[in-house]
Length: 420
Image (cartoon, rainbow, N blue to C red; front, side, top):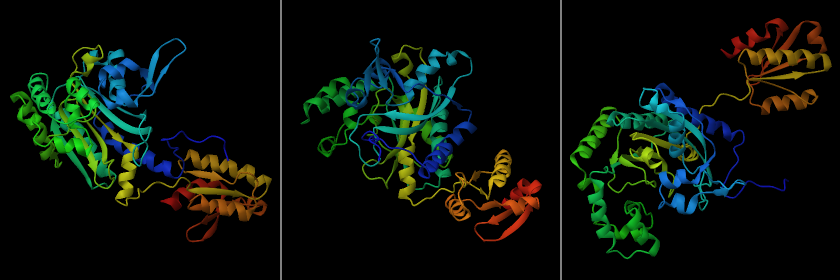
């Protein structure tokens, strides 16, 4: 037993379960690739200010959940708690917005870190696939991203997810709503931390999950009643485009999401089979974030979908993904000459695109065949001295038990044919 264990609130991904996670990442990213999104990868840590400015000083993420560290040189860094601020920083630093082809469309996949109370579906280290469309204000772009996420979930076979949709307005109409909400909230019986939030970002109080707070929010002014005509029209276009694409949604006037940078369109995907941690992904428009972190005005929209939560959603619906076998052929050599010859054949098969493994460690026939069966391979290639003298190997179908001699020179074509 090792002296060390994975840190609390984290997990290791190991075969065979890791194959499901890889398949989920591939399924989420596939629609993005078809829609012109290019892959971006950013460092696992950034300057603390990037998140405190962009995500928001009053958010739980910044005040309670960030892992921060001080380097030997005195720099204040934070493990990234989310992806958008990092991706936007990278795009600005590389001047992608100046290449003349807006929006800049990027997708990413990686691990993120938040110091939270661990529970099912909530980890301190978690995996997301995300997408950002930077530099264009267009309801069709908001709709595109939402549709791509829906298509990704559908491609995995998920059915019991719901799309919640709201508009948070913009700098024209939100100030009046903010003042009305602050007046309402100041009349409630709230703890000191929540009262402080009223002054900094009152919309975040609507996002409070505590039942005692939610009960008091009945009758709170709703942003939808304060939207300016431009925001109303924008939101209506998003709704119409989604409906035309066959995407069902639920209007949720209290949907805020946990980050300060959102404007206008905001959305969340929830799955009813996951209990309290029901959100499997979400995002929205963030037209002012670029300016918050020192860039030019670049209206943008994006989302992040949780890989961990999506895997839990698949389990909740009893969906088992059809994954290709990790091993299709397992080679079993009997004797030193067979080891040399079959090892060469294994390399040929792999180069021909056949997933092939080998009985390493000089196992006897019985143990080697046990390994072949455990590998999940469809075929075993067995060869001894007599087989080699005749220029053949034995190709055994591990499902039917049928076995036939195959000329050594035609093994690759025979296996490809047998698979077909």
